[in-house]
Image (tube, rainbow, N blue to C red; front, side, top):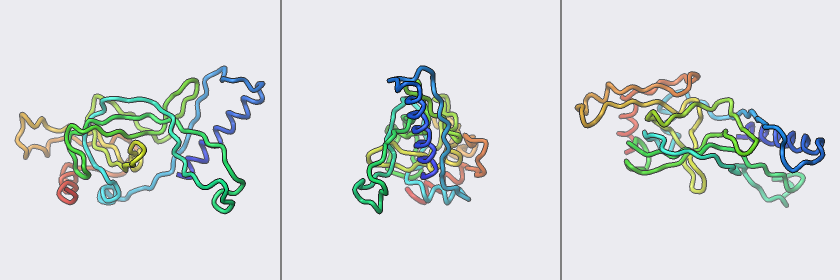
Length: 210
C-alpha cells in the first residue's frame, strides 16, 4: 500500500499549495479530480487467491455510500526512528462503501442473508473526486463472487481490484437440479484479470474451508 499512500499524499500537498497560491481560500472554486494508483499483490492461481482471502462469498450489492477513511498506518510521532521528522499531515482517502447481501459462503463465517460492507478506493465528496486507475465497475444488477480481506474496525477490501471480483449468474435453485450448478456463468469483472474462476473451483474452495 506504500505506493497508494505516496500518490494520495502528493495529491493532497498539491491541493494545499494551489489553495495557498490562490489566496488561501476556504473552498475550491472548481472541481478537482485526483487520479490514484494502487499497489496490490498479484496472484498466480485461484488457489493462491482463495488461500489468502479470509472471506469468499457470493452476493448482490444492496446499498452504496461514499466516505472519507483514514487508512494510513500510524506510528508514534515522537519516535524519530519510526517517524522521522515527527508528526505528519494526515489526509483521509475517499472510498465508495458497498453493502453486500450474502447469498452463499464458500469461505468464512457469513450466512445467507447476512450483510457485509467492503470498500473501493474512489468516489466524490464535495468538489473533490478520487479515481482509482484499477477500479472496476460494480452494479446492483449482478450477483458477484468476492475474494475479501475483512477487518475489525473498517469495511472489508478486495484482495486486489483486478483478480478478486467475478460476475456470477447462478441457475435458479428453485427451478434447477443442484447438479445444474455447472451451468452457472462466471466471468471476471475486470478485463485485465489473468485468472479464470470456474464453478468447480468454487465448490473446491467450499469443500476445503467449510
